[in-house]
Length: 57
Image (cartoon, rainbow, N blue to C red; front, side):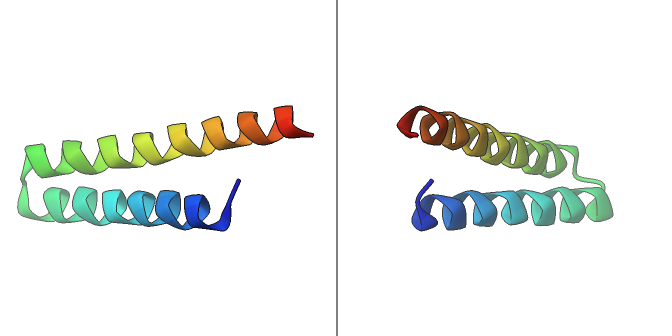
């Protein structure tokens, strides 16, 4: 996994957490759901990168 990929995934995860928190605080279900989706997408990308790294070794 490249450093750029790690940074991108981490920023997407943090962004999702912020969106979810703001959505929860403002009672905005759509924003909260977007935040959860962003976090799930980041975790999925991280898993894919780990699989690619495992096959490189």
